Image 1 (cartoon, protein in one colour):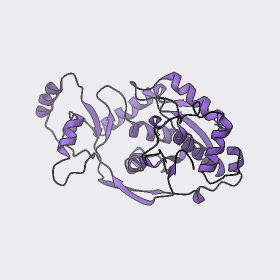
Image 2 (tube, helix red, strand yellow):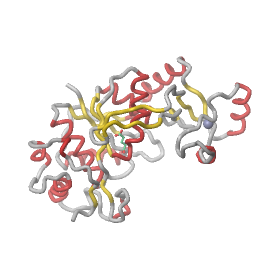
Image 3 (cartoon, helix red, strand yellow):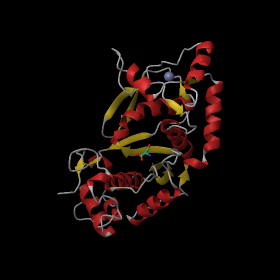
Image 4 (cartoon, protein in one colour):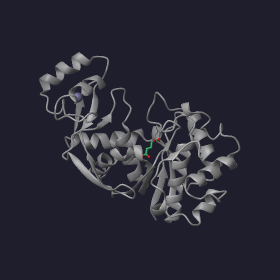
Length: 294
Ligand code: GLU
Ligand code: ZN
């Protein structure tokens, strides 16, 4: 039996868009006979709180989701991440990067560079150059990047179809010691037996990096389902600045659940369990949903 999952970052309450993605992840897993798992992505040590994680789990339960195992917290998996990092270091696939965000922004302004994609500045430095750069960055410790042998990778997404995207030498561990999202997400999905990844389509561009890394680590490829985001009144991704958008702010839970059902094309349904009876991910509208619903 495979597994699906929802993997929220605990840095505040989930809003209507997050709840909809969570509901879709649950529906996709349950409607295909998979287990459903939750993962608390609390790797960002500066923004994550346990209080927020607890509230998120309460909210997911309140809208009618259930899960099959104790939620995994990334903060409790540091040992595993260190082991994988050591193995990659041994394979000669890890190097130090001394670039600041600004350095990368400037480097990618050059002709032929693509903004946001690491151009490999620190990939082939000599040990002497590294000593110099280490001394120069001082306080700001180097981050660690993976040496990728691919420049792109193709994934299959239920909605986007065949999607080819960039695989650069992405960050594995930040200068402050936090492990990076692409690194831990792949390891956690792989170890948990997740074979269906449902999440917002803002992360579609990360999928080729993750799929490439999944292959490198020897895990089977999951199926990807990147769902359209909920947009706020101005047509941009819904955010807490758009008003009363969290479950606790939106009033009675039943009404929010009803709106979730409407947003997924089930206007008469009053619970997610009811939606599940006839849910088919392939039939979900690909159009973004705008909040508040008309
Ligand atoms: N933690 C990410 C988020 O809250 C989701 C990561 C994932 O599903 O892979 O958007
Ligand atoms: Zn660099």
